[in-house]
Image (cartoon, rainbow, N blue to C red; front, side, top):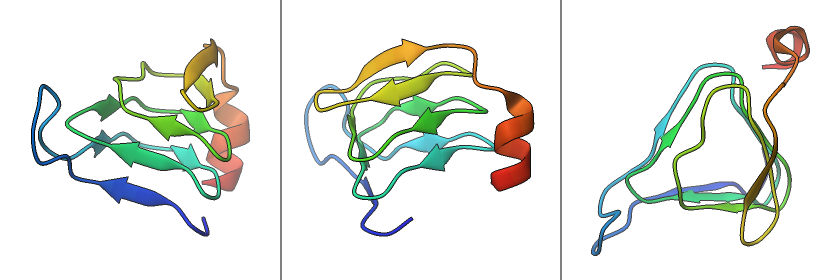
Length: 81
């Protein structure tokens, strides 16, 4: 999506780059940064800053990000990602 940043963190506990799973939708103007793992079938809504591990089937929202759900319809993401 437009304005998405997937970034490397150069120091600290999360030094490194993200690993992003399958069928992940990252909304416009969102940032995913550091050595974190984004699970499969995840929806990151716009504009969200994610700097922690996200489990499979999660919905993530906000700045700072919060997991607001864990039951993403895999059918929804399979049809759109």
